Structures are given as structure tokens and as C-alpha cells.
Image 1 (cartoon, helix red, strand yellow):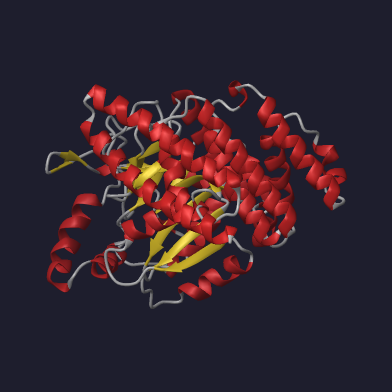
Image 2: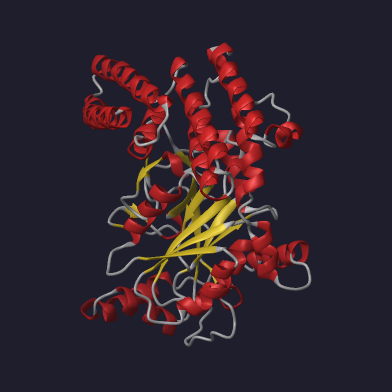
Length: 467
């Protein structure tokens, strides 16, 4: 993924929805912090246990963001909400449950393994197979011992029974993705991606369904603690199901999924090694809070570096010592854009759109209003220049999602964005029509009408502001 990591608040964000699972949450959070998760988006689905109490120390250290997700069937809504509202503030996003632990092999972090696979396959998402763990023949729960220690036996690697002709078991997958490439979630396993984007397994093979066969778990896997003890499985079923079906599913589901053929304690060794390498004596949460804190200075330097690649970061302080220097810097930047060939901007559409969002964020709390506004305008001008290059339909979809938010900004560059977007839409409409790609044609026709409505609204705003 050719995007500057320093532009983002967080590198890897984990998204989950929970209901009355507080007793498992601390272990899950602590493990994934060790494995490289920077922040957690937790959607609370009407929990009646001590969830808030468990989360309080993590929230105080800004390691979690908690949002309400009341009523039933809210998982997909929660996932889509996370993508919609957080996609420009983290580089990678994963969507997993509290009984799923992402286990990268060879001692690496989750993001390291993901980057290696996605870069090699030129892909936008990684689908990870399961290792389904059983009960270890335990009947009762013992919450004094962690899930990873209690359950160390699992199904064989290739366990993939058919359910309605669809492979299940270890064939099931969950994903780590570039959230900007997601169209939406229609199932909790693999989202629908924007046209031209793809999801692959660890071997670089494209995955388009909720499963991936043959099962492969040599580089990274999700340890899935589905059943736990018999008592815990019964509690899980009653939490999810109506009373009418709970007893039946409790009996049938446990017997089918209680797999204990293989002893597997690798994740314990991985966690122990990470603890030894990472955690200094003292408060582990304090360590992770410092490691994963939002660093406005880092983001600002990355913003400057991406908007003006030849700019020397050592000169940053000089430029921003007073208003005149700042204005000169941005005048120089605009002149650079005007004099640069189109190749200067080739392939950087997503980066410049991220820069726009970073500028908006920094303006709210890190930069003064003038500097923040200057960066906003500079980012928008850079974005406009990419219309002189061969931008993709993915780029346009990213922009059209942002235009309703950008339409009110008081910069001429926003008007140029509307002009450039309309021109690009016309080009792609003609291309889709000639190629007979009518589904894409009709979708883009709809988006064109939305674009026209936004442009009309923009004209009204400009007219009002000119009076």
C-alpha cells in the first residue's frame, strides 16, 4: 500500500460490536494491542454487564472509541458506520468479533504481514482463514483463566464442512482492508469493494465470497474460539437467539463445532514474546497510549512532505513563525503545482484526498485557523491537479463520497473539483456505454445526477457569499 503511514491518526484500527461479553474483552484488547492494533472502535449493542467499567481505563488512554448500537441486527450497520466516519483517519481497518484473535506468524505484527501480502498482490484487502478451537473438553467456565490458556485444541487445518453447499469451518474468513476501498458491508465477513479493487488470501489468490478454499494459514490466521466450554456456548447461543431456537442450536451447534483434534499453543508463545519485547516495567496501558497517541506534529510533517515532496522538513518552523512566511510558503506551493508536469501528480489522488481530511482535522485542534485553512486550500489545489492525469473510477467514487462535506468550504478549488469531476464522469460514462457495462453506466448516471444537485447548491452558496 503506497500511502504514507504518517498521514494517519492510527495505522490499524479494529472494529467490533459487543453485547454482554465484558468478561472476555480485556484479554482481547490487550492481545491485539501487542499484535499491533493502534485503536479500537467498539459498538455497544445494549450490553447489560460491566462493559463500561472494563473499557474505562482504555478510554481514558484514548485507545478505544465506544459508540452505541442498540437493538438487534446491528453488526453490518456498525461496520458501515466505522468505514463511513473513520476511513480517512486510519490506514488499515479490520472487522472481527471478541472471540476472534488475529495471529500473524513468524513473530511479526498484524500490519507487517498484511502489508507484505497486499503489496505483493497489488490488492486492497486481506482475507484471513480461521483456525476453529474447541472446548478442550471443558464443561464449565472459569473466567479466572484467559481464553487463550484454556482452549488450546482445535480442528485440523483443512476442516471445512459444507453448509448449504457453502464451505464453512476454517474456510470462513474475516478481513483487514484499506477502508477507503470499501463500498459497503452486506455480510460480516468480506465487504463489497469499489470497482477495480480486490481482496486476496495470504497466497495472493482473489477472494470474492465469505470463504476461501483451500484453507491456508502459513502467514496469518484468525484463532476462532467459537464454542469455549459447553456452559459458555449455551450462554452465547441464548444471547444471540430467540428462546424458540436457542436450545436446539445449543445442542446441535456445540457438537458440530467442538473440534479438539490438534494441540496448538503457538499464539501463547507469540504473545509471551511480544510482552518480553515491548512491555517495559510499569503500566502497560500507559506504554500503548504513548505508542498509539495521535501525533499532530508527525501528521503535519507528513502533510507537508506529501504536498511538496522536495520541501525540507527542517524549514517547517521557519515558514510558520509568522503569517507572512506562511503565506509565502503556500504561494510557492501553488506556483510549484502550476509549473509541475502532470506526472508529478500521477497516482496520488487518494493521497491528496487524505491530505484534505488531515488538514480538516489539524485545523480543528492542532493548527491555528489561518494555517489550517491554508493547508485545506493547498490540499484541494493538489487534488484538482490530478484531473490532468489518468484518474480511476475508484478515485472518482472516493471523491463523490466527500463532496457533500466539501461543498461548503470557501475555496475556489472546490469549484474546480466540481468541474473536474463532471468532466471525468462524462469520460467514464462514454467508456461504459461503448463497452456495454450497463450496471456501471447506470450507477454512474445516478451519481452524476447527485453531482449536478451538489453543484447547483454550490452555485447558490457562492452567489449568497458574493452579496
